Length: 202
Image (cartoon, rainbow, N blue to C red; front, side, top):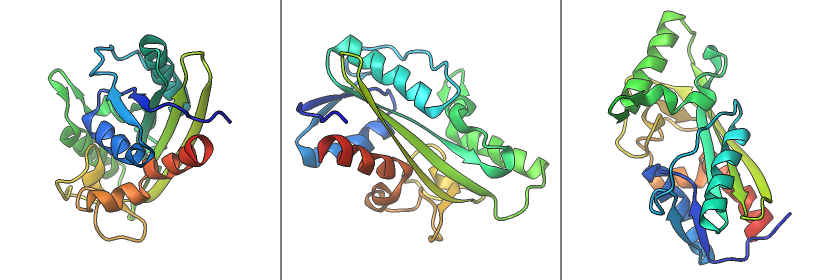
């Protein structure tokens, strides 16, 4: 497994929420981050049907264009009663002509569960795949998952995306209500990142 030896990392994302979380996670290692958006890089088309496939597209594109190692995150919510949907299409469910609207995406998800009369608890998991890619084409992949259940109506102003409707196992608050530091310690992204740190930074 290749070690990360630089001090600057491109975060291959235009999502400010992800950028904040990842910047906080790499800060202890003396690594500064810049986003693909800050560099003026476009978002490549995510044409794969797996988290790993799409993570690779984003990381390799950013690494090639910037000449720096790049870290991408492809993540999503998988709802058991919806056969794993929205999954890799999680962000797509939030797309509107005016940008992403996760309130609408959460409403759509819950409406489908209601239509299907899905039994409680409505189990789901957040899944994250990180890809660290270098300009020479090498990459390392790390996966993380956190399981829980969905609740309605959404609760909390913290977090982003589907966080306000997701209650992780062992808790009675949503990710949207949870202190960000607590969420960072246990999220799907944190699980994957711990593997990344052990493999490439430790």
